[in-house]
Amino acid sequence: MIEGYQRLLFFLFFFIFSKCLTQDNFEINKYKNKIEKDYYKLLLNNNLLIDEVNNYCSTNKKKTENLKKKFFQLLNSWTSVQHIRFGPIEDFNNYLRIQFWPDKRNVIARQYEKVIRNKSSEYTDFTSLGAKSVAIQGIPVLEKIIFDELNTYNLNNRTFVCNYMKAILKNLEVIFLYTHNIWKNEADFYENIDEDQLLGLFYNSILSQLEIIMYQKIVNTSKKNQKYSKKKLEFWRSNYSWDSILNNIGSIYEFYTMVLKPLLVEAKYPKLSDFENNFKMTLIFLNDVSYPIEKEKNIQQLNVDLEKAHLKIKALHSSLLNDVSEVLSINIGFNKLDGD
Image (tube, rainbow, N blue to C red; front, top):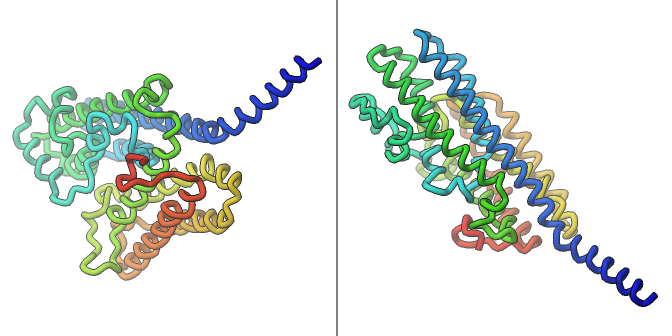
């Protein structure tokens, strides 16, 4: 009788302890699995663009509509995981190899012209390309080719440019496959990451992404000496810059709903309703700006929208940096990506 009672107490204690121990991990692992699926979708959309490039280059097609459509699918997937700035995406300089930006000194255009002028086979072999400057390896170069170079239809460059595109996409495929495989494999993923630090890594990575949106993706025209310039925008050639911001904030909101909100409810965060409402209103505002900011002729209205976006995202960042992190006891270091 006593032995049975002790066993009952043991299982009761174990149940309570396990629930407390795994509550946070359950939510975080659920989000981790989502990111793994998002990386897989990124890989698939990259492969679809490879197929379309092969189709385009195997004929004398001049129209690039299908290429642009597949490129937008790739951009949509990439900007949905841009906020992940830790793990395998940081190995071997992978993040910058995917997207070298901001390009404040126009490095991409200058190096691209040199590549086109020399037409070296080193840029049409994906292995050799992977060892070159990150500025001429990734998505920004694809954007320049598809929305700029191919419009000129220079037959002298067509063969080389086609092979160069194929090398870029094969290079990206290797990076995306490597990244996805590690996120999928628990042993590989946690080889250099402590599972207990995963919440902090996600959180600090998101704070860093919000800072990038505030200070790099959005030109804050209310700031002294800050003027709107289309070519400062992230994807100005494809008119995708605002969509990129919207996708970033949407992905961060998913992190909130899947991970942060359950934890804040459990912690009885008194400002939860206001915080969530501000988050939703930011998304609604970003979604309501329906025009491509690259094409907006009314600069005064554009400046108003850019300033509003900056202030809303700054308020969101401030809440996460201060109140929310304190309630959830998440350490914010000087270098937020360190998670300490």
